[in-house]
Image 1 (cartoon, rainbow, N blue to C red):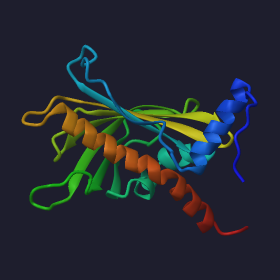
Image 2 (image 1 turned 30 degrees about the horizontal axis):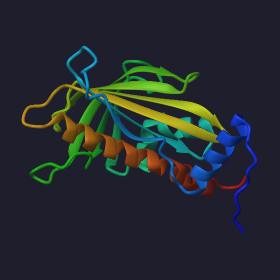
Image 3 (image 1 turned 180 degrees about the horizontal axis):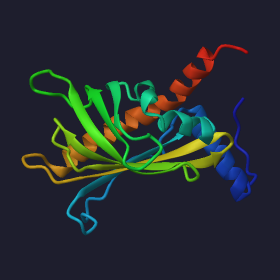
Length: 202
């Protein structure tokens, strides 16, 4: 039975129960999409960010999102990941991704070649820059950072910046990227659970 109480909870307990309620309701996203539309941050680029709370420890989330070979587990639009040069935990690493990230008029697959700008396992963050593609987003930068949210949950913040595009409004492309990246974050928890079930007992 549900009931209301007039008891005033301490701030830390209130935050705890609100967090648990959101998790139970499967409201995973603390921010659906935040677009910096007022200015272009002084560099002429378009910016946006999405974020979410995943009910999994930060180390498990980092193990998943930091490995190129595991991208298809939480990015369903990616079919193939190929290392072109370098080691994936070192700046300068270059990878080629292909799949259906962005619809092509001829129905062909999208492809993206991106370079690792920075990676810091201690802060659970990395930055990739798109060097070439057939989707028109060359030069875009994607930054992902994880934060321990307590209670074996992880806060994910994914920000991006792209060069302005001709014949495309800033709102439409940033909204699309936000939706795309948000859907990826939403799959992380399930990907971790699936991987755990597939581990053979020792």
